[in-house]
Image (tube, rainbow, N blue to C red; front, side):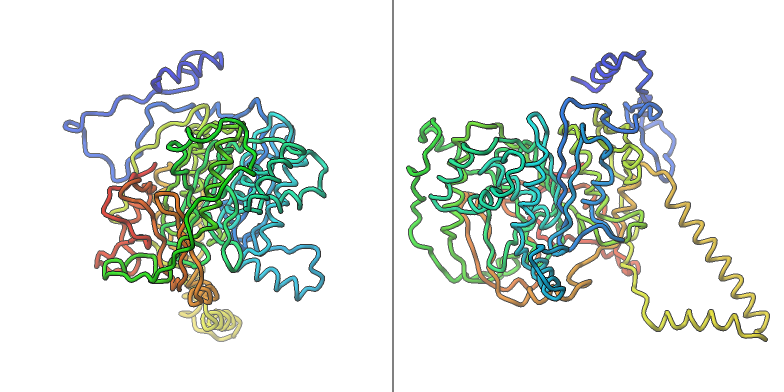
Length: 588
């Protein structure tokens, strides 16, 4: 169906005169005869909704109630520099619980269990939770209890998460898949259900299946949108079931940073089961009894010293001791068999993982800052919510505050326009912190105004300085309120400074120089672990040559711009993650 037919269909459904809701732009002029375009053209969409009829809430109605869970990132909570998770919460409708409920959970490392008695122990608990996420169980169970108390048949469940909050969301989705959702008020059963979820031996799978049939309900996750999921649970990493793939998730969207380098923030990518289509005919069609399952025969863990060629030394994977992870491989085997025999929701997950530049989850700039890199992935994620027809209700006016035009999202999502070029633009540097000397100079400058007998020249300078400051402040205020197209918003955000957490918070370097265990998954679905130093190595993007790589178009715009301080030398932004010689799939 063409866009024109879709327009007519929507007008017919809304019972309005033809042409009232939508306007059609005239065809573009012939390039060969057209006059030269202005310096900053404002391209028009072929079809666009008349903004005068956009309702305050979009969509205004939906046939399902939506339960939305938002899990913030490491150390993030509502404060002066909010993350994209808080931004999402602020965009959502919250005034009618019969249509939509929104649950927000502050990030790992921001609160502790009530069992912690003293303030000192509370601070220690928060610090260790921030570094190693050792209280993940409490975060997952809190989200589970919200669903247990509020879910009714027919509700749609949607989740958002950032960083370790993204891992929390994916763990909660995994728990719902493995043990199901308890009925209301079964609080005493929740810790037991979580314990069964984390058990990955044969007995654990048998018990979780029996528990699910006796006490729980099957549910579906309609939309799971995450920013920069990290694979970090505990000092010694342990993968929880169904965190890398989950068949009860209908739509999965993942925004990933190309420039994150910290050791405990390696990305947790979605992995589709490799052998499902090849071996499904060999498995019995009935619901399984897990006592009949056998572990994959992989023998003993094979340990080898990895020696690398000069070319391989450039790889993000450090020279280290490497071995096949039998526990992870057994877990993958059980996950595949469990999902194959599930009688509930066998629809394949719609998966898209897109790489963005630098800061994807927000939390690096003050809330009053209009433009930042994190806004790009925020707009992309909101658009994906409408594309997936989630039914999540958004405040139209607040969508405008993040640079989105509501008329391009509802009643249908219009295609994006061509991006503006980053050429002839300069990336802004990171603002310098005001040092103590600068503060004292300002104090002394203010004191001089109070000293009698100052010459007229000095007084004149002060007056001029004040006038200029007021003028600059007025210009800044006008810039903040100026209405921009989404393409212009993208360009302004692309030119925003980057914030490297290893430079901002040097404490993270402690984990860079400590040998740690890491893991990755091969194309054949086998897991491999290795032990070594991270030393701020960039992220590894697997299987680029065979699977390709989806990169947001804003990365290309940033690569076209000139770096701050290059002084005409033509220095450009280059992503930290290593991109192979394959043509990226540029995502709009």
